[in-house]
Image 1 (tube, helix red, strand yellow):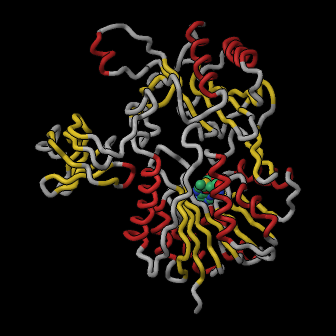
Image 2 (tube, rainbow, N blue to C red):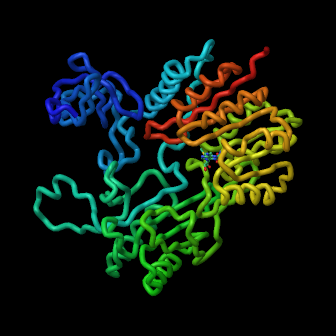
Image 3 (cartoon, rainbow, N blue to C red):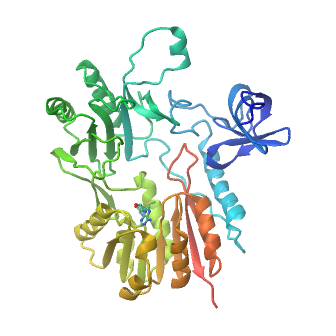
Length: 470
Ligand SMILES: C[S@@+](CC[C@H](N)C(=O)[O-])C[C@H]1O[C@@H](n2cnc3c(N)ncnc32)[C@H](O)[C@@H]1O
């Protein structure tokens, strides 16, 4: 950053609109200023944290006027915790900003001729307690507020909560989280108290030592819950103490699991998961279909909105029963199994082998026998040999990660010329980029944003592409 700009304060900046990644935008001296944690309509003094020749970034240090669209933030951790960053903006506006993001990305990046109208976003009925999975971290380095530091007093430094954005070793101790209902807050708070009362060590990430490392809580709309505790030390007596406490105190937990993780990172796809009590999975249900979710399985984190998303996907696919459908990036095969009844055959492809095992199991559990699932990297799997072995698709459903599809995959889709492509994405920018590439042969005829994550700037988007007549 230019030294001249560092710590410079821009006064009376009028915040004009929301830009990408939830930051807001104002203008100063002919430059765009991106500001976090404000709302359009606020007038603020901003301390510049980053400056380039064409733009600046900063944080608010004083509010002169508050936007009329603001609402009271409901969470005591607002501003410190990295989640729920939009809770100071009323929900109707959140929805319209999200829809506008899709409009902007498709106009700017998509550059598609005859772009259809972006449909109104499908809002979430629950705007709080909508997540079915949260991941909390134990730490011996609790984030202290400015007031706590200034007071000079001694504070408890052990914490169980979320990472402070961009600080890998600092954790905000969470008292109440509005993202997950059921027993989530009780389990977290009582486990923390139990650990403090019994002098169990909280993880020290810098030195990679400590017993209690991480707590994952998964819940399902069927009322089941999975608790996974990750331990950073293999001291069985202490592990037994923690697990026995959870089992006795929360008999309603249906899957109580633990992992001993002595690695440098918290990922556990390559580690053994021990079932301490109950089952090794929980179940979700949709239209009578059951989906098994193991500790390593991906499942959309907002179950109610996942159902809306899948219904849009199925509607856009307009299946009549005789189609071969490819479900690319199938995860645990949820979309594949969800549409299987309406198709002749569904073929799912996914990178993670364990997810493919779950996908097959989910077909079996539900008596679905017209699905096939394959594990591998999409750009390697989806080749001429694969197509020759299976029937050519009539409909392709694709739901890639945030980075979008690999160029080779896009080229393969252009070569395949399936009559319809339904593209689901959690990142409209990469989706718009891929749609622009596909527009050589496809017309874009439907765009439906879905809000999976209220109180955040994230937006899910489904589009339908139809093969142009040659
Ligand atoms: C957004 S999730 C979609 C999950 C699924 N459609 C659902 O609704 O549950 C994207 C999936 O793509 C998978 N994936 C990421 N990169 C991949 C690649 N190069 N090849 C195949 N699958 C990949 C991830 O493992 C993940 O399961």
